[in-house]
Image (cartoon, rainbow, N blue to C red; front, top):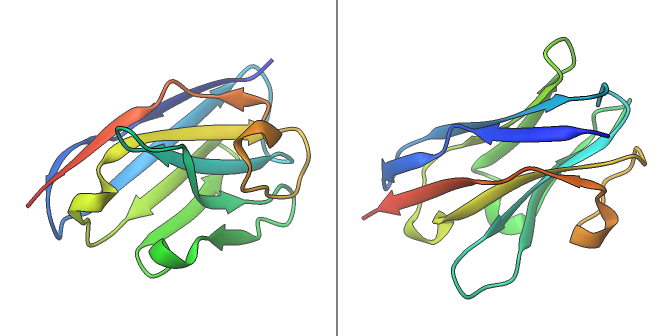
Length: 124
């Protein structure tokens, strides 16, 4: 079992930055693909960024590629999502997810473990 705990969300002005953290416990996630998703009110959960296991290849969706960076620190068993130039439509609950397979998937049901989410609210 893997437990994931997100942190780092909050209320930020448009144009600001945030770094979200996802700390894992229960087992190491160094070989696991990790994903960040977000869900805005009334919308479906959306994949935004992922990092593969072992090779640490990164992937972000086109709409956030210039502003979102995903990384991991295996020594801390933690994955990060750095967000720059926050926009109002970035407002959502951000979820971290892990899958036992090492390759990234953009499909939520491909992930085996989920955190509880952290709220990001961007004020304009």
